[in-house]
Amino acid sequence: MARPFKTQRDPQATPRRPKTNFTKLADDPNAPPEPTQRLHKLLALAGLGSRRDMELLIASGRVTVNGVPATAGQGVTQFDVVRLDSRILKLPFVAELPQVLIYHKPEGEIVSQDDPEGRASVFDKLPKVKNAKWIAIGRLDMNTSGLLIFTTSGELANRFMHPRYEVEREYAVRIFGELTEGQMTQLKEGIELEDGPANFDSITAQGGEGANHWYQVILREGRNREVRRLFEAFQLPVSRLMRVRFGPVNLPPRVKRGQMLKLEQKEVVGLLEWADLPVPSAPLRQLTQREKLKATTVFMPKVRKQRVSALDRPPRDAATGEARPYRGKTDATRKDAPKKPAPRKNENRRVRQTSDLAAPAMQKKSDRNRGRG
Image (spheres, rainbow, N blue to C red):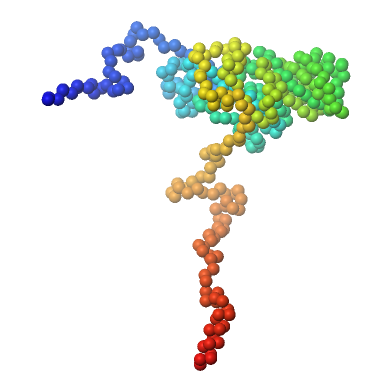
């Protein structure tokens, strides 16, 4: 039986890219142009910061499009190569549902990623996210606890924090002393501070014991230590300050101090609708049973190990490749410091000798030899 003829394959065609007779999009003059989107908007959607921050980032010259420094208001397509400091960015041309995390911040932690003093930061405990980063919605000083919201959407964070939206912040305040009715009225009407007038939208007494009294206050600004400074204007120091609500998000009672909770997809959609932001048209991802249980479970975050940057690593010798110790730090790291001799192998091991034998047996043998002589 004769073998069938083998079909001749096109050498330019591959299983993934079969050869076709279609004209390339770039070569087709009748093809519709690719839709463009603003670069700073896509960078904000990618979780790199707010739109204002992205405009400043583009102006700094660190962002390039196809090897050319980007400009303010520039539009890009999905075929453009966008880099940040020579690192290629994956921009969300198709909007994805952002992630939102609730954290009950304890006292003693700062809301900052860069701290020269090396204090504990809330960013040390956040879980890792792919192709995005966590943005803190609002700040709390080191001595303030309570609700802290994190999101991967720069637009959602901007909707919460921008002063023109006047989003309500609600706090529970404990002071040493008690306000009079006139002082409470004055706090609602306004008090002149160093950086301008400030006031509470509402203030309600919540009782107290002894010299300490609790108050519930609501304001629409986020200036530095504003709540504390308003009470200190009447010589009433704040002994405890806790944020319990930020806009439509309340601190759940089951989220105890130091714990986190990730909002479900439906709750995130509700936040986007509240902020008048576009909701992704793609259907919500179907979660597995394990993911459903994990999404509604309060968890205690773990502090991630900090990576040692290239600046903190000791320099290496160009010839040998060995690490050179720093000079001028301590005696142990000085180059001319005396080195401790390495211990010898089996230095403390005791070798068995003749003297280790039983003394009585040796004595009897010696006596017998004398008798024979």
